[in-house]
Length: 505
Image (cartoon, rainbow, N blue to C red; front, side):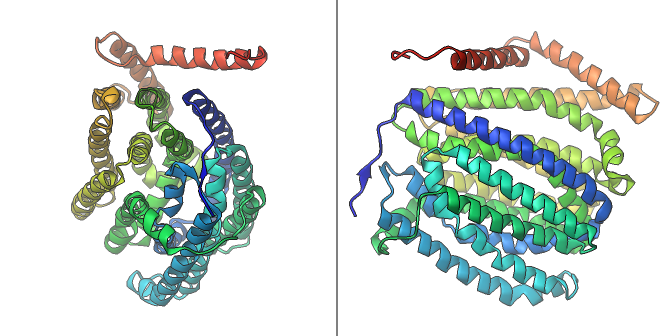
């Protein structure tokens, strides 16, 4: 079948579709996060760190198959200039299934050695097998989901993902209440995968029809490998928690780390939304470097403003919030949640930068950055765990990811002349607000000798005062001014929906 030319879509229409997609996905994310909070509150009283540790190690072993079974071929279809043909999607679909089958067989064969190496017990072996077989729930939905994303049909995606989140929360809570421990987390994940597959398959018009063509695989494999290797390397890097922490400090420590990361990773949910919308949008803007640069700058500026004004307040209050909502058994994880919250802020910024890097045709460059950051995290992280124990996990991640932000922003600024100076504009607010937060911690622990509630209130007041002082320093990004611009943009969009658009607009 011959390729068809993609419908002509101008820069303004791409941005409008992307904005609509982002709005519906953000709404879905807010609803999902509400479910996640309810789930976390209940599960924190039904499960223990050892349950989270067991599930974390098992889930990590099987989750690598998600990256190995894709090879970035679906992203290559999204980026190409013409609409994917029936033969192209058919070929990529069956490549995914074949790779997934090989990976599932390998994980199942290695399950006994994994469980023995970390003293997880015999119950972990069938859990590894179940999670491995669940990889097919991901591979079967890749192409149907790709067709929806390329069409920027994010409303349908949002509905499907909200349903699967509800199914996961309901099943996990029911199974945990029944006393299944770590199995509740595993089976809840499988329920989510099954429900999501049905919903995405129902929403997508794509069906596996066509002819398998090796030439399609050869043409797409170059970009696909370069696109998929960075997240695979990132997944391998994340393995230093279950592998190194688990080996040195035990599975209870892994449970604390995984639980803290799950609580702190809300900004990454926002990053996932932005990246899913941004990648097809940036790909459509490849021939408009000025529009590309303007869109990226605006996204980064608004995202950093929202996170830098809200997340520090939550970080300051974690000594109060964690025991209040989750109980005393998780108090030991408070410093981890604070450090991970800062790291997740940086990871969210990297998400947009990396998406621009991939859309700009530099996936191999992205791979080099990820490998360098991964090597640094494994080396420094292993050293920190041996010297400082659990207290060394958080600072290492934050420092390494800050360096990754700097390098990625510098490389993205070289994509086209319109992006010059991007690195400085990205780093300045991150570094300056980070210093203000450090000063706030010093002040609140030096001045306040009372309870944790009073210390939190003191910290919020001090941080707000330092932010307003920063606003008067020449050359800094005005966070308050950016908030005004965001509110003005929201009002303009609301007014535009009320007044019918003219043919000219």
